[in-house]
Length: 274
Image (tube, rainbow, N blue to C red; front, side, top):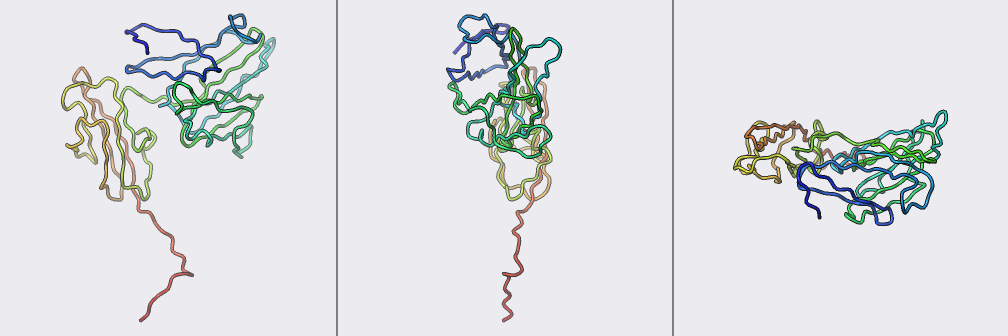
């Protein structure tokens, strides 16, 4: 572990052979990744050049991403293009892709998944690309960075992720409150609410929960709790957070609960007429 004060940074060398790198922190941080040049000590290949991108946190996963590699023009010597896909290890095999104008999604091919050594809960996949567009999907979430290599040439950029405010948010059954707004839950009656707070006060009453405008007193200052007993219909969930300057911030979403309907087969329905 490392201890960094405000404004300080650390540079780490990350190698594929060591399973990548997982970084976590107890304060907001920014993480960037860069490719080294072809003359960097220890490299066994002659392609590439310094290139840089920001790395999205796993909380910024999305479900659908469309990308396309850079098409070289004029004197460019780029000849290798890749998509670097990150997903949860438990659901990585749900990742599919459609190439070009195709609407048919297939499993990933052309590369292999690598499970992270620092945190085996996440894996990454480096997929070689052609000069066509690609659409990637995973209902459990993914993020993608793209990079390309050539003789003394390279590019590296963040190709797909969300841009959610992570300083304060809450999750409903593991889904970000942005993503569940307007969502229907049929047959689901129990919900787990979890807050993620970066700037909250440490004073009593810093966190309040409201369901349909009514404060849940038992959940005050509870970062994680179970919500049950909601009836069919639309319900609002609001989280109030008091920050370190004693100011309140509000975060709200709305969900709909519907009864789970069981279809009846008329041919198998029997009536007892007495």
